Length: 306
Image 1 (cartoon, rainbow, N blue to C red):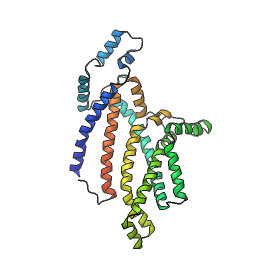
Image 2 (tube, rainbow, N blue to C red; image 1 turned 90 degrees about the horizontal axis):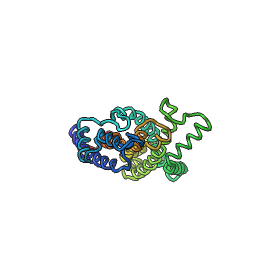
Image 3 (tube, rainbow, N blue to C red; image 1 turned 30 degrees about the horizontal axis):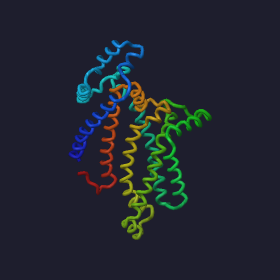
Image 4 (tube, one colour; image 1 turned 90 degrees about the vertical axis):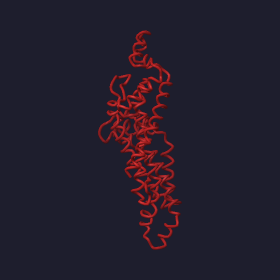
């Protein structure tokens, strides 16, 4: 197991290098001059050039990329072009709000999605199955920005029950978490149903019923346990997508997370922040996939990591 972990962690190095090269090339292709933005629109040519030299933007791209890799090797993310704060500090301040929002969204989405998926699989073809299918289609179809604005209009403007945005107590989580997790719950429900129906058709499930195993045991022990293998994979991927892709929801609800920080950084062409955030998102996906692989062995002991 330890050797497997070392190999997987070592495999993240070329992945992160490839991502860093792609992101570095992409952000330097964005239109706009960060030196001009820092100096101001009314700054003279000499002032802009001074800012460019101060930020080392006058050097060739390969030199800038080398400096960037050197900083990464020493676990230094550099300083923001806009605020001159350490990028690590800025990301650290925004990381926990995004993480908590993602965790809350995933918890309710997975519980509801898996529950509805199992219910649809057990009661397939009946009204429960059809109702869950309609709900899943609606959850997938609603754009997150539209659903967020609709919730704000209903529960904040009209009823005054919940705050329109910001980060604070549990009331601030209700609408953003529902908006962020609705599509995940819908996808989980349909995916769990498909996996459950596929496993329910296996010979060992029919054999368990023929031997007189109670239906509850057939559902939870023989069917659901094996159907959860692909569901775990989907859960890990969805968690990674939410953690790195909550940009729209954070913007709608003024959530002080990584998504808002990324939007602001792109608008200002803040290269160090953009590169650090996307590299962080890539690392999150790698680690989440590793955790998913380890969970396979817990759910089904017959799976061995090699």
